[in-house]
Length: 99
Image 1 (tube, rainbow, N blue to C red):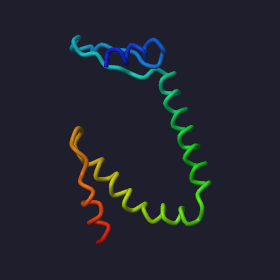
Image 2: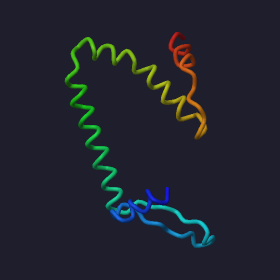
Image 3: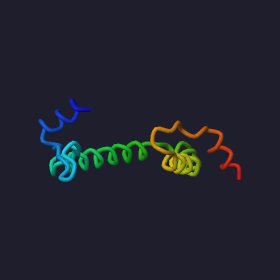
Image 4: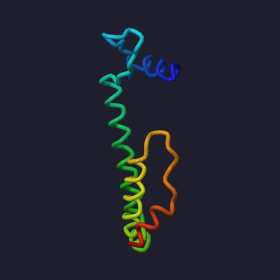
């Protein structure tokens, strides 16, 4: 982790900030350039996904639309799971899809 933060600092994308109350604690913050870098990457990914979706034929788009409910439930399960927990079993997503 230290090496990764060091690279981000060198690139001007992050900085270390020592805690004012407990000097043993060091937080890592994104710089203005780091935040802009993340937003650019997100915009590029959204555009790429948009182009890929536009290239799907009608049948594939129909299949994808049919899967949206299951994907949303899967994401919700993952968001509720504690950090580091194993992913919920696939059957939990399928069993709710049958309701």
